[in-house]
Image 1 (cartoon, one colour):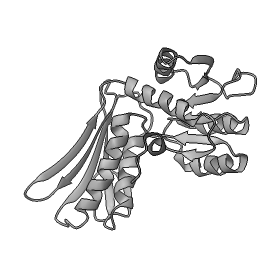
Image 2: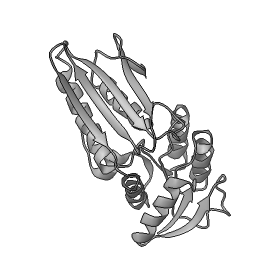
Image 3: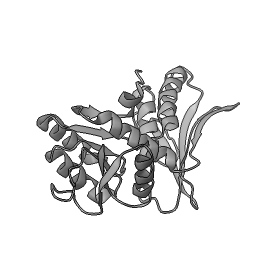
Image 4: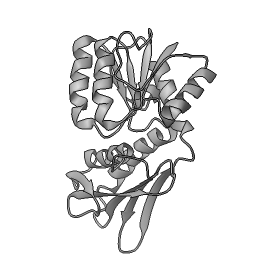
Length: 235
């Protein structure tokens, strides 16, 4: 199919490579807001840009009737507006804080563990994420998704915040280090032991492959979706 890449940075170039390897054509490589003219007849747009322009990019694509797969984080306060627009226009929108197959399985594991740990009051939960020094937002979108998964499956924690967990405030430590693609850890600690689940990305290609697979999946669909829908994760 014809794919427009909106945000032609490091991720955009890897997405281009993988999409072409899978037999697709790249009809647009944009560093500006999409328009009918510069989208080049795209059947799907994959948006990996910057937090400050992501909303306008996605909004333009939805208004033009082009399904959007978006992986930009740091703009989610405006996401409900995009979801409402998608429903109103019978468009298609899929957001992922992380498109890696492994991470999305990790999300499901995290939620299941949160349910199991709910009755174990002697344990305190703490999150940590490590990314390259060029990442602009903190905490990462993936860490936020993990934190929300815990909050939604626990009565003990009401919301997440940066730094250490205190009372009903679930903490996230955000570390910026060299060229790390992304490492996310969830800890449950008591006075006598510690449980840890961890996902470590070794390259950005896993993120790019997942985004292309999501673009293949969303073509000709209508609605608001996530990687759970793409992967068939039901709980």
